[in-house]
Amino acid sequence: MFYLADLVKSKKKGACPFCGADAVHHDITILCEERGDGFIEIWCDACNRRDAYSIRGFKDNYPREA
Image (cartoon, rainbow, N blue to C red; front, side, top):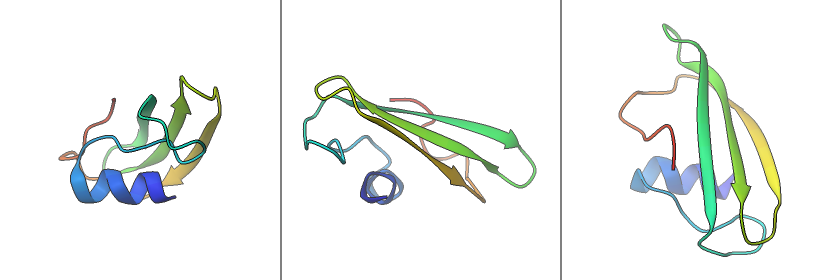
């Protein structure tokens, strides 16, 4: 969840929530554009961990991929 909070505040990718490396990526998928509901996937090339979170009310001014 810290990664998502960092993304919302800074509008750019942050450190891996699992190992702290700068090799993290994310992908946001919106399933309902009018409400901004969907999910975010986070993965790290350094530790090979990944996680997914549901999101609501996503605004288009955040990067969908990094």
